[in-house]
Image (tube, rainbow, N blue to C red):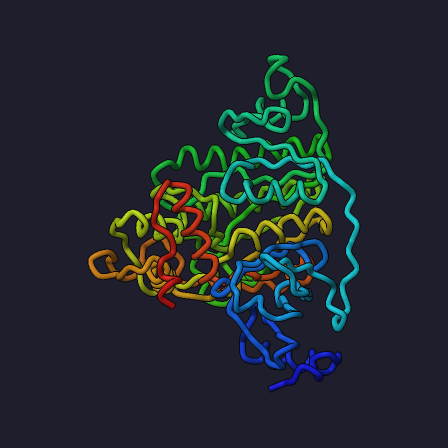
Length: 439
């Protein structure tokens, strides 16, 4: 036990933090300096703190009388390396996050506001990336397939139709429509794509038109207009590779992609490289690994966590294929890293962006059912491995960690809980994460 006096010194506080981290705890630690004891509470079990950074966020914690009884509390957030101080006051406690005095902070890099186009900006990833970019002061314009109310900063556009893509830059059409005036963009995030292996089998015409022709149309505009661009690939390009998926694997090992979606994403990467060689276009490629979270609406073709969550919430049977392992990435971690590219753009680079939770598919199902307080009996059909599907995806994200400050701040367990809460609300269900009350 470390007493309160030693905690007041730098060495004592560092010793406390090291002890907790060694035990594998990466949530929030609460230290009560008055009672001379250390209280470690699991993130989202006893309270929550949402922090965007160690300098700007202030949040109210859930009001728990026992927790707020102390006169002075210090919270250490392992995710943001920030310290929160609170003095006793009436009502709910509000913690102000401050710079940790014992850890040297990185100097913030000033990023000039950019004019950014996000294609597919209404999708599962785009709907989180757009507000993340806007929060950093960038001017963001969104293009997607459907009509939308946010006309000043939005245009309907099918990227497989060159005329519609070109008009994002040249303007034209109805004066009261989406693109009455020409625009210039400094950077384009090309997210628009048909997603998923089985979607690619059933709707291969759409897949190849959107993914291959759509990417080529954006590249043609890039060659003409000179903007920088980020093109979205997928972990699926690694196909049947069984080892650690490092970015160099695709250049050194002959890979067999296992489905049309995977092939289309590898074609996209080749298109980007060919354009750079011919026209000196400046681009970055990103390979996303199993992104999940709020904002991904259900269809039978969506990601595995989305499928399991929706079907478990609606008491629908679903199939769990054994023998498959993944590194899932929560959407807020993904969108933050993607937004960081705007401030550290390295033309020609390719990045794996994935999580640190290397898990089998059975674990996803177990966590979902745990939070819902349900059993797999009569609800889950267990089968052997699925065809056209990679066995395991063990990712090496060291380059993204180094260049883009990529971090996993939301565990698979917590991410699934948040996804279930969002999905229950999105579909008007009364069911919430009852399992949390049984822990």
